[in-house]
View 1: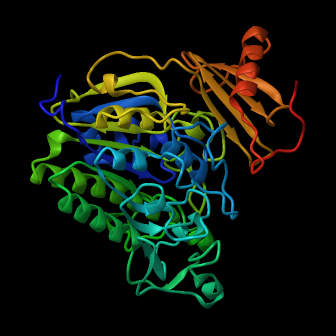
View 2: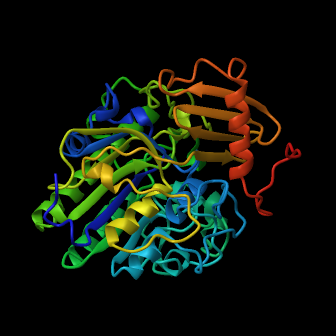
Length: 453
């Protein structure tokens, strides 16, 4: 189905949920929680059923998304307080689209490393930024301040006294804490700012990266970390309090996505706007929430911080009225790094050199396409791990460089229950060869143990 806008530069909206599991949406199998707007979005658009995050935790996953480089080559490969960040000379989705004439905005959670300045999002290509700079700040749904285009914006919230030392915006974990005065809920501020950005830029191409910080938990609040302004219809449920908060967060994610789609239709720019909804990694088990309470990872094994499917396969929907035919499913495997080549093609510019990115524009136009190159992940917590997906096969090695290899056939065993490493040593060796090839050493990211030669 060819769009009347196909020759023009479409607007691009990327909505990124934070720690949303593959099974958290109705259209991806959720049974208890209702997500009518996202389900309708999928029905009118296309579901990607084998779409992967850049990593299994937020900072490196977002680094892969923004740079188009996989975990063996991207700049931020883990969560750290060190000022390891994307630099202005490095290409990003935002800088590429800005160069193509787009107005660009990042609203919500930045969390790509821990910048030692407030302008890092603006420095790497975003005309407009409003939100949290570091990931610890983003835990706090009622912060005392946010950052707007390099400047501190004071809010009416107040954190408990024990967190006051963290309210200096210049320190690495600035802004974290638990509020005792809750007046302004940051996720609500973010959706309003996103809608305002769309309204301001409706007459020329724009790129909106709406980086939610839900349904993440406020880790600092312990088992009361699923903070929402009210529990709504879930207040009377016979569920643990954190699960009520989680359910309300899912409802709010659904509502806010619907508000964006409604505005595009109201402004009559829906047919020239691609909206992609996805999540930065698998489901969390923090803030009192249990990942299996609502079966957040569906049929997949593992959660956030795992390189099994539950930690990295994410629910992904593409919506583009007049271009994407409704009710479509794409079963080929893609990942966050592919946004770079895809956005570049849509904008009519050449993708940056030296990236690990393949375009799925043809898929959205109804054509069959299979990714040519392998996918790769590495993770530096929990003793470290690395994984590679090549064709129907996926291998995991724990720890990196020296550990035992597990090998799974994703075509008939997406739950990763049967290990073929012993019966197919040829494929296990091939997987190790790919891992060795795709990892490029970086002095900022090291693991214990020596690499096998």
